[in-house]
Length: 194
Image (cartoon, rainbow, N blue to C red; front, side, top):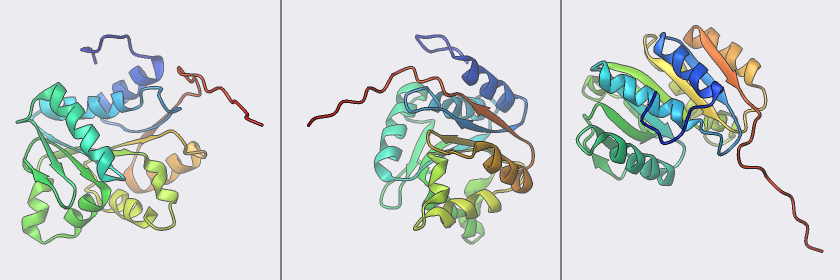
């Protein structure tokens, strides 16, 4: 869990420790609190254990950003990108993709499903998209149809019902550790212009 120029917060340590012990995790923390450290730890675990990690995001721009972050950390050979219109190193141990790409992979013929071999972790960044009327079904399908051995790492700044959501995750995915922090390291100040 090292390698960062700062110490980890207790919620990050709790979530990473749970993930290392084989649990799925749901991390609910404010924007800027450092939830993505837990997703990056899943990628690290996959790499060190000879397994695979898929890092999913709701939009291509976020996928591109996360791809650049992970390449800077692990090198270009270890990280791939799949966004529907871009395919870079799709057989890498860590692949960043939009959630729709993963859903399509789950429903693909055996050739598409081969990419799920050795898959140990799926990070769902911005998992609150599950409540999106247009795209929530895609996220739900992914969560339900992932192979049972895959550990799910769910990250959100805005999921308001973390405990209820975790109860559903336990029903469909098995044991899931809920890690919630409300500490906002970057305070928000409201300004009103009249």
